[in-house]
Image 1 (cartoon, helix red, strand yellow):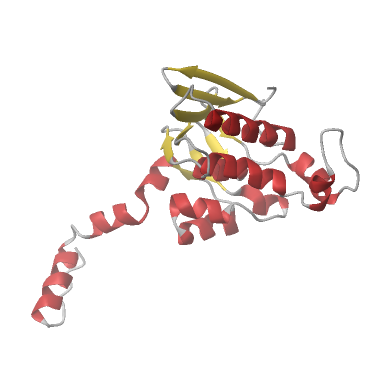
Image 2 (cartoon, helix red, strand yellow):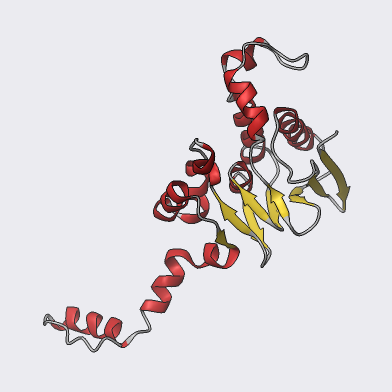
Length: 212
């Protein structure tokens, strides 16, 4: 394996992304990921998988833009490719993500840095996402003239936040990702006006707002 490192300790497999400098997802790397997760699912060496990357700066920088441009716009095949890659250049991406999301073992994403674009999709394909305090998430595809990752981001952030991130390319921190709707609901419910709104509804009267 050139782009992925695998080790197993006490029935837990550690899968580390290692394609410097930002672990950008090339087709060969995605094939390696798919092969690793398929092999782990067939073996009895591990009962769970942790997907992470070395360091604390980048988890996965997303698709390798130069490589994906070649895949989607070329008419020639590399030695490791088949006619299927020519007909359906997105198949390698789907195979990679499905190997994680539909594999036999539970997968924990340990996001220890930036997860951008395809990196968000890779984290969202896991069963559990644990993010360090310096982790950031984003869909910067809009900045390079494409769209993608929205469906996967919805599993982490909900449709409205996902749309905002897709249309603007704005990055959000792990803390903001954690808060989302339920945290806002809990905080709002503690305001005096929230209690007044509930009381007014039960008493069938108009609320007396105090803006507190």
